[in-house]
Image (cartoon, rainbow, N blue to C red):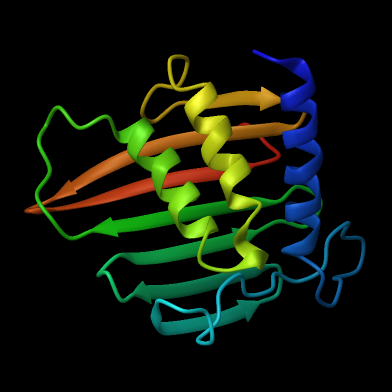
Length: 168
């Protein structure tokens, strides 16, 4: 892997993590409260909700193409963002869920310039695809981890991608 690309990507990741927690800081916390990543004004977003409770944020988004995304953000000194992609279609058992998650990040990054850093996560997932295993956390740089998992729910699939500064 090209180290220059990885270092650039990790720099972008750190900026994205910082930007996603710029609200009011709790005492003794490195990061402020989570802020919404999406909004109703983004083309393609048909429904959006966001709530914050201290250092925890919950965001729900529905895109006009039918994809539902829930983003759980948490962290005081180490940020954790969990993306839950509710794929409301039956996909073959041979689906490469890691590749699918990378493609989803790249796809949603194009919805709005503020979401552009998500493409870096998608690229990192694709670069480490051969090393990633469903349900296992993988360090992709100093202090940056990715974990991908999938839960089958009848005909639907819940694809979970955790981006964090800790190995959880």
